[in-house]
Image: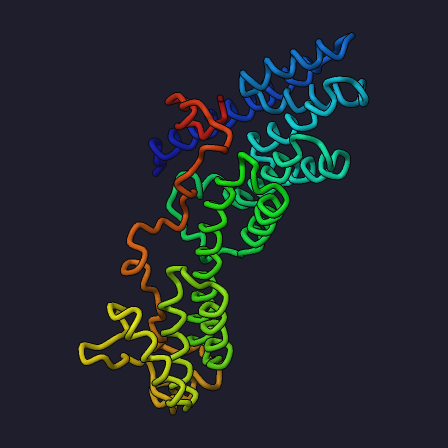
Length: 333
């Protein structure tokens, strides 16, 4: 027996897909047909400004590139390079934005707006890897590869060191605080993973690294808890007890602390709670994994790991998106 409703649904979906692909091809062909060709540098620049204001980033990129190719030493060339960084960024081409910022810094190290290039370089790395799902769905970015976060922190640090009076410095500082918290929490996740795999020394070292290098972040209490757990599991009870005193004196509300001030160890020092199969497979087949340490709800109740920092004063502003932009994920913007 044929399932006509199912076949009909497939047909509708196929038609919608064909229409979508046709629309993409149409708009792409239209953009290619409207490649900019002007006689003067001013005409290129004014055309680029109109495209930027209309948020037509791809066409703006082409126009700005054409301006620089045809008038590399013109009066608008340097400004076009700066606006090309902005246009790449707004088009979510963060790698190209960072490369354009690098090029501007290399060509114009003494330019009065070179601080903007440093800022945009950090901002591009800050947003790198945050795609469609991160924009519409909550995501714990502390569990992601921290490479772009480290790069962004380094670029913002360069901006503040070189241009402490820059108008972009305050926003960069706030983003650095956010990134520092993110990197510290990532280390705790790695420590929890090492505990799960039975790598006690590696886990303990991660906790100590957080305590020594990420002071005043919400991850420090968990860093101390990791150290206590690690020292206890390694049979170094004196170090575990001394670290416990620090945790109890500074963070008495930590979830790992018992009512009597003791520590709720997640597994014993002799590994008695881990079976032979867990030891043989380095924890991969362990059915009783330790729960790990994560006290963000206690010490950072407003945390939203997938969110941007509160301050967006210096970040390029975007207009509110219409309903058809939202339901089509920007396809028909």
